[in-house]
Image (cartoon, rainbow, N blue to C red; front, side, top):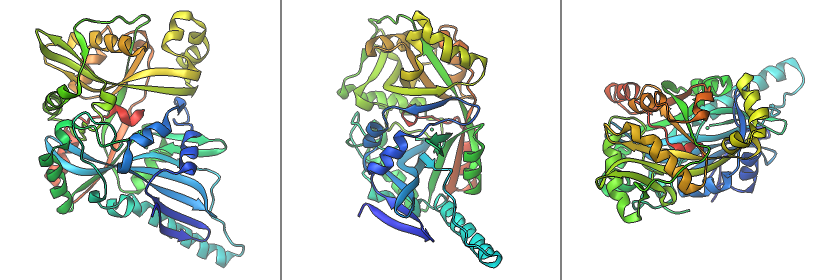
Length: 429
């Protein structure tokens, strides 16, 4: 059964939806992401990404008279915090129409009764975001195992407020088994299952710092602010290939997964779920040794608005300039997501060479990634003068990681606050 009723109030219903249907996809495709005063955009490949999540993605959907009015995605995945595995639910694809209002009956007493009932219904909805079993179901219901380099899985972000036609929405900001490598081995999966058996679970979301609506939602649901992250851009007007850069074969991916596991062993929220998505992981070798690596995920936005003076320049002037038009076209902003970046200590200066070669191989001029702004990797790229013109123009506001911990000890919870957060680039595609 794809739909299961969880709550109802008057003409409103909350249902658990196992797979995205046509109504959900249409709502998400028409959603404009981003908060007021920030960049506003729409994603151009939502159906494909939803398909990649496979059985790991389900939805809570709000209906009024059987008409879809809002939805949020619940992405099941295994995450790691300093090597300790936990089952988790990641919130994405939040979209709720602003015009949706609870109908109130006339008369003071009836109105007061309806107000209390509506508030109670709202609290019941919020409680779903606190209970992973109620919201997304038992972890064992989902196929979260898969071979190294396979495609698919679970993922997303509460990252933005948004508009859908006259509605207001927020991004909570596609076939096959999870792309995982070492993370999907029996031992690691068993570790996460044991954690869930002990009642441990992590629910988390990404929220734009200026998006008050989404921050209020996660705060009311009991989520706590954990870490912050920033966007880093890379660009080249004429990217060149590099003979030292090659794309890994599927047979080479498990060994690379082990390098990634070690590289991110001090991080929280780490998952290599989509590290090898579509088998597009590139490495740079020196004397036969992999010294840098990155996953390449093609993505496309339609940018609606960028605020401020630089926003006006980007939206109005750059598209008229032949060179800069290669980097940024609002109606068709094509870019590569740099995912699961790897760098051997001492090889930091080679990262721009790797990124440039990846852009050349994939046929793009621009690349984006999202990094914890107190991480070594962020400091390394932020201070690198070879990241290109777009990174110098970028004036991104921080994103925030919010989480709700169930069954974790205080010591386990504290490690999330003290460790840099791994931000999966796939969650922004």
